[in-house]
Image (cartoon, rainbow, N blue to C red; front, side, top):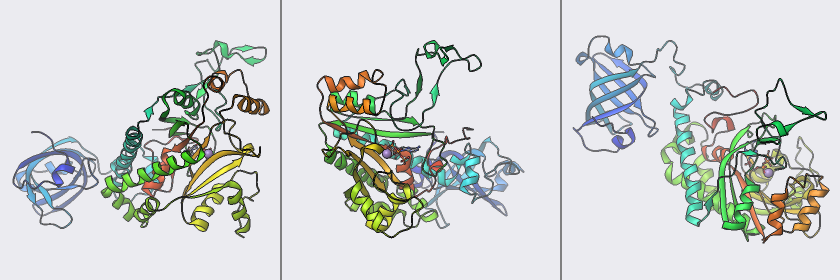
Length: 461
Ligand code: ATP
Ligand code: MN
């Protein structure tokens, strides 16, 4: 018999028809002569109830159908008597695909802590919480592509392995096939010419530099791929491996860049509200009673836009005691970003025109020579969710900056070439996909919005 998805069956009104479902037992309730099984197949957060008249089955057969087991059930669809569901299945046959010993199955009981679930990441997709998060992750990834596709952007696949050590966004993981016990040395230095690529290579920290190359031909492009940062920071907002969405747009200036970022974030949040209702309701009820309200708030309100300099002034005059002191010229800490968003403006904030010393070499310099056309989008509960800028399009200015920072200009030749041949104003930004997921799911630890998190000392699953 053809298997039906539980999602479709729960909406069906074909009472009396014979159906077949396949899924995992979430719970089992026994009473005299009848057992109630709650079955989930991942297609929707809700379970379907299978009612089993036990005398119709061989003695002890139901003993192997415990929480965690995988089964195939056929039976007739009936209107449910119980509350909480509209239809249920009156089971005729039950095939057991795989048993789960109640003595050892870690998810036998409900209500485990998120910390415990991280230790069993191989099984946590079986929980309601992670089912909801993974379905929403899919929905958000799809919405990202839909947003850009509808606007005519071209999805460009930028490389994961990079030879540029100057992407300028944190510590990198090295990529090598060298025998670590016999590293080739020349003149007292590691001889990377003997390595696989004939040069030192790493995992990318951003697709931007390559994205810019494509934007200088295709106009509007974006990348959406994994990025890697070997920062040894054990925070609730940093992963060593995360996914980033990076649009890059020819002819856009800072203002256009902000408009695109705001439109994009609102689109994604609205998409979640419209397409992930059941999962959102579940997360709202269990983790954050204000989640849906917060999502609606972001869609309905304009983001506040102000300069870094104005932001620093507000923080200094706030009288608030911060762990890190605020001074013009220093990078803002997450506590500062969140103060502006959560306490001062009570709205998402876009901070612009940061001091050039704390931003990357490629950002377009302002006329004052002190600041650059950077923009960070700051979100409640998160801090920075997007970082972006208008790029420096002048060959001379970019080269000067590269020299000022004593970067390796020879290695950057291909990037500098874009400014030599048909340069154009352009701008782009990076949205951390998991930071977005934190916001739309209401979860508070970034380890809980990616299936298999990579963090310092943790690459088990
Ligand atoms: P932060 O200051 O929060 O560490 P960043 O300024 O180093 O971030 P960018 O280089 O601007 O980050 O990267 C663009 C976006 O990628 C950030 O706005 C954020 O959403 C996301 N991001 C950066 N680092 C991480 C990380 N380690 N884990 C998850 N997301 C990240
Ligand atoms: Mn940033």
